[in-house]
Amino acid sequence: MSAVAKKSSVAKKPAAKTQKRTMSADHKAKLAQGRTESRVVSRYLEAISAGKGKRGRKRTPESISMQITKIDREISGAPAIRRLELVQKRTDLAGERERLSARVDLAGVEKDFVKVAKSYAKRTGISYGAFRSVGVPAEVLKRAGISRARS
Image 1 (cartoon, rainbow, N blue to C red):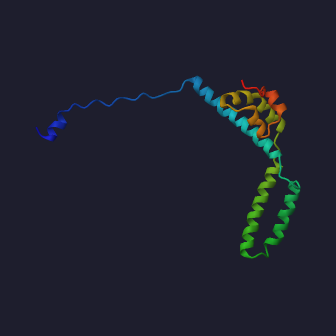
Image 2: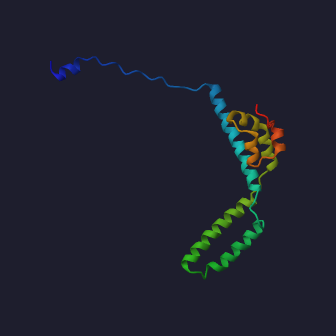
Image 3: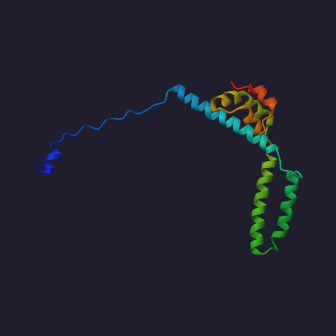
């Protein structure tokens, strides 16, 4: 018997059909809840960290505008490389001014955080101490129902 004949005499198995996996409605709902909670917690943490500035004199949109005006005066007579640096600095300052001008409704963000923080902490294993170490005030955690005791 030749090698070719041997191959053709072996019966081929039909390819097994793979079943399409589907998620249950409950699983989809829990994923959506997790995404929502993560978004709310992240928004709150960003808001409280934005409130903490660097050491030294506080920057205001007005002081940044004055710096931009100074750059605009200097830029026309500057050498090419300095002009490039000034354009970048102006862009950075304009972005910072925009961020400072955009006010975050901390009370609203905090209220949303208090609603979801306990569920989020339980689901992700985040402790009271971890929240405190990133700047979440103790009274906010208390209102959220997160205590120091491990549960």
